[in-house]
Every structure is written in C-alpha cells, then in structure tokens.
Amino acid sequence: MKQIFFVILLAFLVTSCTTPLQKTEQTRELMSTYFTITAYDKNPQKAEQAIDSAFDEIARIESILSIYQNTAQAYLLNKQGYIDNAVPELIETINKSIYYGELSDGAFEITVQPVLDLYTYSFTELKRPPTDQEISSAVKEIGYKNILIKGNHIEFTKPNMKITLGGIAKGYAVEKAINVLKQNGINHALVNAGGNMRAIGNKENEKWSIALRNPRDENDYITIVYLDNNAVSTSGDYERYFDENKTFHHIINPTTGYSATDLISVTIVTDNAYDADALSTSVFVLGPEKGLELIEKLDNAEGLLITKDKKIIKSSGWK
Image 1: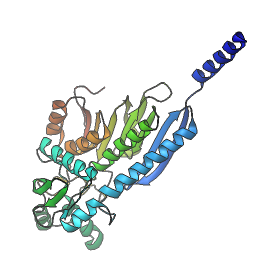
Image 2: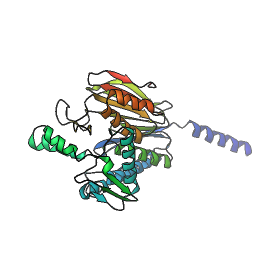
Image 3: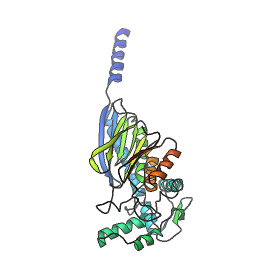
C-alpha cells in the first residue's frame, strides 16, 4: 500500500512541476491610453482574476489623478486651487513630481497645464499656433514651487495655476498594477501602458523583449530592450502633437513655454515605472547634453536618446 501511495505521489509531483505556464492577456483603455497586462501562470483562471484586480487598481488611480474626471481630486485641485483631505496617492504623486522638478533643475514641471490649455485652444478653436505674447503670458502661471502641501491639504499659492500629471501618473499606475499582480500570486507579468512598461519574472524562461519604436516610422524599430524585473519608459514628440511638423507637442519646456524640440525620443530603463516615466520626460526637456548628464548621475538608470537630426546617444551603461 505504501508503495502504491509513493507512486501516486511521485506522479503528482512530476505533473505539477512540468505543468507549463500559460499566457493570459487583457487590454483596456484607461488614462487616455491602452493598458495591456500579460501574465504567465499555471492557472489561467487565477491569472484572469489577478489581471482584473490590477485593472481595477489602475482605474482607481485614474479616478484620483485625472484632471478630466470631474470627481477626481486632481481635477478639483485645478478647479478650486486647493483641496482638503487629499488622499495619499495624490500627495505622493505631487511630492514625487516636485522631487523630479528639483532633480532636473525645473525641467520636470507639472504646472505647465496652462500652456497645454493654450495650445489646445489655439489649434482647435483659432486654427493657428499661439503667439509669442500668449505663450509668454501662460508661462507666468507656471511654477511647482508655488504648490503648498501641509498635511493632507494642497493649495496653489499663485492664481490660475493648474497641474498635469501626464508625465508621471501612468508610471505610477503601472507600479500599482504590478503590486496587485504580486499580491495575487502572479510572478511573471508585463504591464504596458503605451510606452511605460514594467516586468516581473520572465516570459517562458526568457527575459521580456521590447521593441523600441522608430519615432519617425511606426512600422520600424531602433533596437530591442530586454527587461528583467525592471521598467522602461519612452517619451516622444510623436505621442501627442498639435501640428503636422510636431513643433508643438505635449512635452513643454517650462522656461520658454514652447515644446522641447532638441530630442524626438527618450527611452529610460530603470528599476520601476514610476521613476522611468518621470525621468524620460525630464531628460526630453533637458536635451541631449544635460539629459545625459542627469542619467549618468543616477544609479540603476540608463537611457537612449534620439536627437532631432536622428542621432542616437546612449548612456555609458546601456546594453
């Protein structure tokens, strides 16, 4: 009897050890982009439930950090100029944004929304670019140092200020989604938020391979990035632009009020999507020389920059 039990137990152990990981994947539209979550697990039902929970978390983050949903705290902050009882997620994201503002000497600036509003109005309603005078006027409303955080109270100390969290919120949501997947027992997954990606584990015993898009040809790629429990984020002028020449796009130089144009793409690989998102935006605004200097100062961060004349610049540790 003992011998029969041993044979049955051995057969069970062999079967459980050799059960292949199965791929489960979902894509949903959130935060004005498409999120795709891919998971590999022996139990597809478990993976489906984990992915559903991760998407719920992304939606929850959007409901706080969106400047377009009229019940979101970020929206209310822009509308009122202050907010009481701010939730930790909003406080954390604004504090992180201020940190990157300081780290980048002001290149990362979450209060450029008045300039983006001007761009949108000029191109949509007036059918023309904004004038120098209009841009100069909008720039006067920029300044993250005029954000006051005291406890759970946030306020703007200057009138007409507005924040945009587009340069950091998706990375934050990706990290939150990864945390949920881990909590639900998923060890191999990739969360992709339109260029902001974070991987855990591996893909069928291999590193996750990400094709880095050619910023001037969506059907071509520059190189392959391999992720191993880390993150990659790309910022480019092709993501959201207002004119055909991409002279006016969504990545604003807060000093001039004009779009940053020395680079057309910046890709950052680092430990987490939160930092990768903010750092790719920071470097894009700083330009090739100062941007590369910033990357080289940081531990566990590497970058690939493409200039407006399509020159490729890599940080010293880029593989």
